[in-house]
Length: 602
Image 1: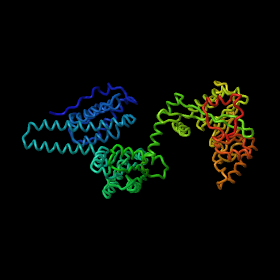
Image 2: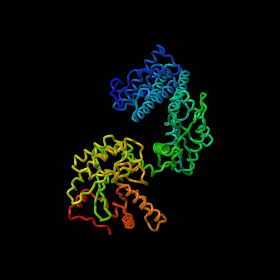
Image 3: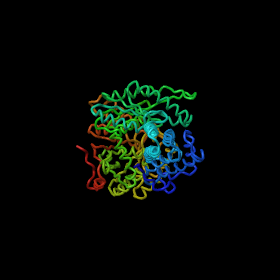
Image 4: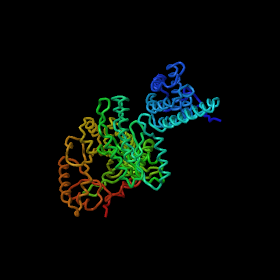
């Protein structure tokens, strides 16, 4: 009996779109033409090239349906492999060429994007090879039943050769002849099973700017470049007894067995990087090549091929992300944990912003000459449902990277103004201070955002102060200056977190200068920097007062810091020595008449 595979349940034309929707039919036609041109003329197809092109169009549509349908359909790949054999395209060279063009061009030519589509394509190609082999095997068996014993032996030998060729095509990259990802996975499986007590190093080597070379010089030059790089690395692998594989257009893998520690894997990666980075002369062009490497080295036992490759890929990502001079990165579990945490936060942050899951704590700002609370600084808080409290700097930096600073800042501003409006019946109502990110300051609608928050809450403009950073004030941007002037005209105060001298202050609408907290760290009589820190602070406070700016200090954690600030004439301060950040409800209680003046910390 022969094995059978079910047909795909629906034709591509019946499959609904997935992600980007189905491409236009002319893209299918163009890809099928390219597919036909890539095939060797080793089989005769009745009707010639036109008929073969029509067949490949039908097969492309079948693959398209499997790639873009709502449900993955791997059987479509099996059917396409069998269809090649049924339509007189049964030479293994045709199968190898087909696998190559499908891997390299199908998604790009049909304008399909996304990791899910790439994963589906890999499964479809694997099933296609299986369908091709099985159908060819069944045809050979059926033909052999009606021939003599000698002929049958010849058929059997031919069948074995065909199977070996197809197996080789399935496990090797047709361009470089190197093992592919499937072969690498099988090799790692074998090493882990046979030598669990040893150590193993895996290095992923990525050619930088390869896509630009391909776009500039064309696929012919790019292919010859890859072949040259593969030839160099193959020599290194043979010399050092390493396993080499080609995982994709610009990525190679090098496996070092029986390592004694990370240094062995790093040495292997260094040797490969030095080899790759020699310029290549291809087609009359001198092509400078640079590369990055991701390395993992660990005990073989208890690991899996997927785990090793995933760790090496993560290290490669770090090498790309780190300083340009960094050519490789070694996998570190602690750094992986930070990356996983960052990914978790990135995934949940947008929904948290939409749902208003962020809260505020409030820290008193104290006037030093009479120890009276004159303001409250709003501090954002996020209690993640799984990770717990997330430091404000961490989620604010993340919001900056993924473009959520403006909606997050708007939510916090409205919440803070609404709370501060309830404190205005106090004998001396506090001024609300809240940080304003430079990104939010660049928003052309920020003045409207601020006035909307004031109008909605009823908070007087004079009781709101936005704290901006020094880099925002230093930007040579007319738009920033215009925005600051517009905010000042609404009647609110503007403070700047100052990291040094008076640059840009004289002509700006800044009313308050917040001293760099690092200056306070030097106020310690046991430190050699004590006198210079005091001298610097005295000079800054006097200079800012001469410019008619109020001076405030943050991060006051000790009595000697508070006493020094008092002696130097600093106007206001906040910090844990004076008062810890408090809940909104505790802040509400603070502004009952019976709770003032604010007592000093012991």
